[in-house]
Length: 176
Image (cartoon, rainbow, N blue to C red):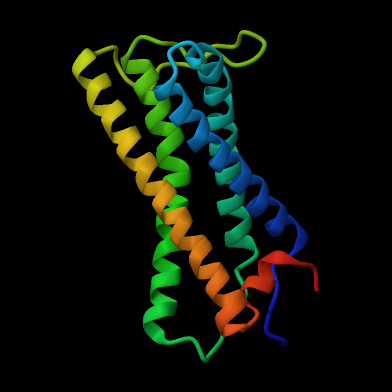
């Protein structure tokens, strides 16, 4: 059986769509903190987009389980291979944790998560000011950590594309 060298179309679509959505979420989140005037409409965009990320993360994890990633090149040093695997685990964890923390934070603050069409999601946490404060802090800190990990992921991708030229970047970047 031939070794898989590229992600299929669905995996690539999920990756790039979620990358765009997650980056948008990070910048929308920064905008919500920076501008009280824009906060209401940014929040109205941030919440449903976060739930979309959560749903796509679940689909992506299921899809990844059913369609494993291509193997890393044998020439990759073991420490780099372990770092790549660990960073992907943390990326997936954050794809779930961030929307769930945001939802729980909204619940604890007494703010219902209202989706387009007026559908209100059930609360994930009891209304509690101290819990809201803690969740808001955790959501913010993990947001910065997520952004840092994305930059590290991008750096690794570019390292594979421009320095190692080992096909790792190409496996997600184009059809084969």
